[in-house]
Image 1 (cartoon, rainbow, N blue to C red):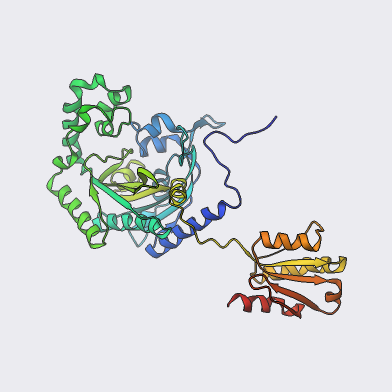
Image 2 (cartoon, rainbow, N blue to C red; image 1 turned 90 degrees about the vertical axis):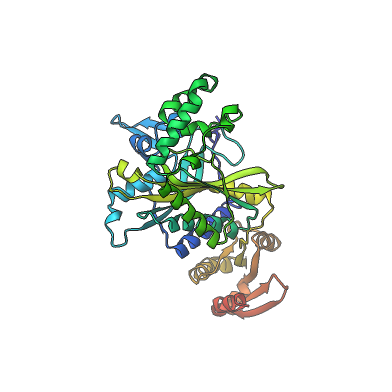
Length: 424
């Protein structure tokens, strides 16, 4: 019986995984410059964490989570997003007690949502995200957005579009919530069952509905920006001013609400607008949250973060035909002729590798011509040819595959020779 990969998942094979590694290194290097430290949390958590942290009214909790019972009957869920787990760890490990009250973290890892697979969207997908917890300063909002933009620009993406909105504080949200209920309630029967339940749970989520996005009431719904109090308006203005100072263009969209319940104040999405990529496509999203840390048992500690899908980033790179500067070659391939030379090369190969060189040799007793073909396929810079006669004379022939030149050197000087040539 053949075994197939589960629907909505993928194997990342050699030849592709190097692109993932390159992108992850870009992300890690940028986070290092911005002073965000990596955190690694479990792939599964107690279900209650996501119910409380993400929100009972979200599609993620209601429809998309992979939830099961362990052997003791406890409800466990594969993490559908990263923020709740990071905040749980922040609280459980008392990171708020450190001398620096601002905690800056990043994560890279698989997430799981049961949704319809499509191009760039999987049921197991990889997210990169950051969280900055512990300050209400609007400057950190701009920093988070700047970091996200930097990631995309560093891999060659252009035509990026930042869409931003403010969801206001609790007072502003309450006034807007009441206005939304009054707007939708008389005709809520014309909306889908999800929106009908959202009317009382979280009417803001109605604006994020994909089924009813064409309903006439959507276009005339009260905008959150009209209900911001003075404090919320001032906060949003500060964020926009910081973005201008950083040279980041933006578009204010009063209908941007995001899909999670914990957002307050700043909410944003980064899109790419390109004829080659098709319609405007969301690449990343995030926003500010308050109350989330407290809801998980911690102190009052506001935060802001974003997450992006690595699959969607790679899709954008492919659609725009961006070539990533990945060095897929090796430094040296050992070609051996004769039984003694072959036996000696095993230890020689190990010495090359311990010296920091990428090296390989033949393990299948191929003929000379076939070994050279393998070296060419591996994109080797040099081929070191060792036969029994050369071994007895403590020498080895080294061929530079970039220009075809060949030299005979002492075997003990091979590492020095390859490193010196590699510096040029």
